[in-house]
Length: 419
Ligand code: PMP
Image 1 (cartoon, rainbow, N blue to C red):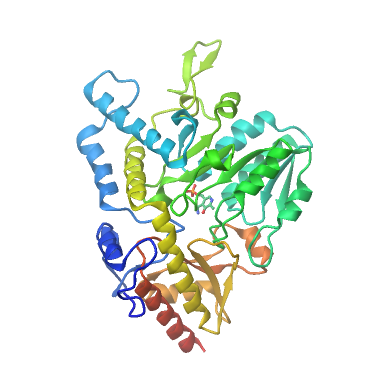
Image 2 (image 1 turned 135 degrees about the vertical axis):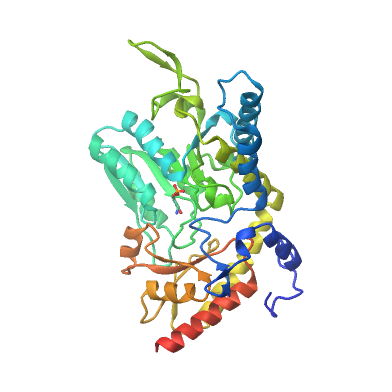
């Protein structure tokens, strides 16, 4: 740990607790290019603790069976474990009911589900869908596709120079034509925490439904869909210490019931004849085919792991890390931070004067430091800032102050050599 921070109690966690926590993540303890790995690409995906990896393998060693349909011991055990994750999610996001949680392949899949099942059913020619200028491509393209099909229009909330949304401009965009508003909770490229409660309340005043892309929020913020009053909320398991290929869509019961199924097949039906099919109740209506059973179960383990750490503790610790990282980076005159919103979480995006972000990323990688470079799947946002991309440090609860020191020293060396 950094000498500056040794023996200092950080809000949320003490240093020795983080050292203990790191032991839970086997992947962190390896050398990359001859240096100890510094993993700063957590917004892309988080690493998995042992309990999650063990949960995955335990399923295949002890439980593997198809769920819901089988009338035997293993099928029963697997179904109970699978549905237990739905119950955990119900608590994790404080939904009214567990049935309001649909398992999907991840955030992207959840957005596509709503764009197709809700958008294609309810959007009409001339209607408007509002997204923001800082959306991930996953929260742009599905809406563009459905708007094109329905001859509806996509409107964009502008982004200010500091990386906040222009809420006054948003108010100006809202009208009786607005049917859907879909915005990101925390920007993956800038780290901005958006005022989603205000956005939801404004959109509801004119009767629009609101989708919140929680991909980056799930591991960093307490999510309470009842408090937010959002209509839909989505996130991916892999960004909250769980496996890839699994995520959720939360939707209010009355909306989910009014929507058409997205995919047809097994499990989503009540009765099939060649003349007509009737559909199952929610959530199964949206879960056609054999689901990703092992990953759902391990996702549940990841949620328990996260809840045990406590979101408030995680957020407080990460806030200290991010502030420290920002301060240290700003001591380097060649560095410019992109995204300086007052309300931010765990992402520090920056540019090095005179250097391409990709080159910086490669040179950091040569020193064992994993950052992400490029447009972060937010090309329109990069265009807004007149840049091709950034270098992004994204922090997780298992990162340390000394890792930030290592990265900052590496950047100083790289810049000195480049000049
Ligand atoms: N939205 C945001 C804000 C994201 O950061 C991501 C992942 N980078 C996504 C959506 C898409 O998530 P996934 O790839 O897990 O579907």
